[in-house]
View: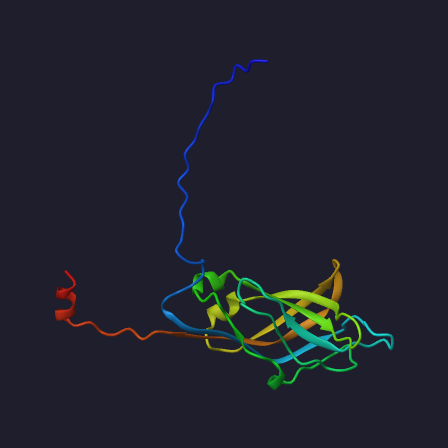
Length: 178
């Protein structure tokens, strides 16, 4: 059969970047710290009606590798010691990017002889940290598992953020640029 449609062509110009989005040359350090972290009403994952929960930050757009806390044994209401919460080094450091970023996390149950069980998951909005750089901000997030409530995750979070110091340019430097 013969079509009565005329051929159509189109040219697109797509912008490209030399590197991934969300990276700022001005930033020397972007690290997320957590403290006074606890959870309440977690799901029991072990036979005895308890869990051995730990916090797991999977590899994601913000983190180059996964990070996890130490576990708290036999509880549904864990409190993690501050020394067991590792700093999270951000690979994306642009403030406009971080303003809209979500830091994903999971609460998992440690199992010695089988795969660790997922107890709940959620995310932390970094916009509150960006609004108060280098200051502690309280958070309270509801956990979910398979679309159902799975407990509450709370504590304090801080975005440690440092920028390069800018050298003051003299008039001589400004004129030499032309």
